[in-house]
Length: 165
Image (cartoon, rainbow, N blue to C red):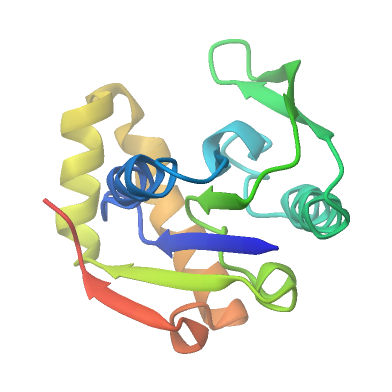
């Protein structure tokens, strides 16, 4: 099994790195990317137990080389309203804040951490997604920092690099 997790603060370039890995690795292997944005339970509960349980289930299915389904969160309706089937793959990439948490590390994942100054990261997110989420992003910054402090994600990453532009 090959499992890669790309983690770091919002706006660090995790999705960009995941796309690069997908492009390079899928030349001769089967690869899937799962974005944490699809798994989060809204703004308030995004980094909670539901995410951890989803990741445990994903990791277990990947270890067994079994197909699985994930519930997809719809940010417009603020609810889980669809599913995505993931067939067994050579390499599974988990991308987003919370992707490199302990349950994923315990499964032998290779963890990539992208460093970025928190203020630079939030500016990138607001430029990409719009100022209408500025209030949520301020709260998100607090939630992600608390998560990283508890989980020690950066300290347990095998690869630490500066943010991607």
